Amino acid sequence: SWQDVGRTASGRRRPIMMNQVGIQCRHCQNVPVKNRQKGAIYYPAKLTGIYQAAQNMGVMHITKLCMHVDEDTMNRLGTSEQTRGHGGKKYWADTASAQGVEEYLGGGLCFVTNPSVAN
Image (tube, rainbow, N blue to C red; front, side):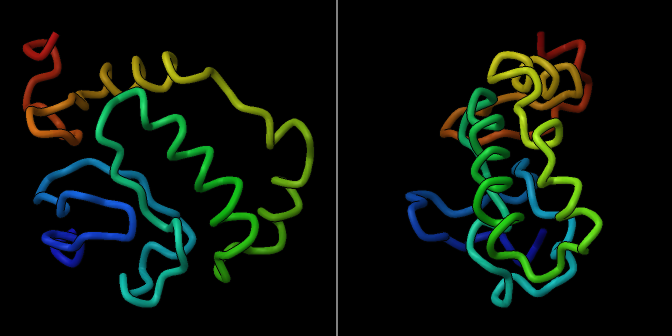
């Protein structure tokens, strides 16, 4: 979002660019950026980083830090079926690519206008 553009988060070397693709916690997405807990949003530099970003978010932010996750969701996340990984790095990268997400020069992910042109 425009709130994220130009910001550098802890551990980031580059600022967020407009239209850069990231993943964010759906439970606190409407909370102002400055009020979100650590790990609420990730901007992977590569397609293969999507899987790790989602794992980091699930293990730390959603289960331990986010104050906006409802009790039912927390209970479902506590079951072994819900916490097991689904697919792995290649699966997540291929799925994002099929949806039109590609790596751009300089690092970062973006949506391409026509996914069939990118491949």
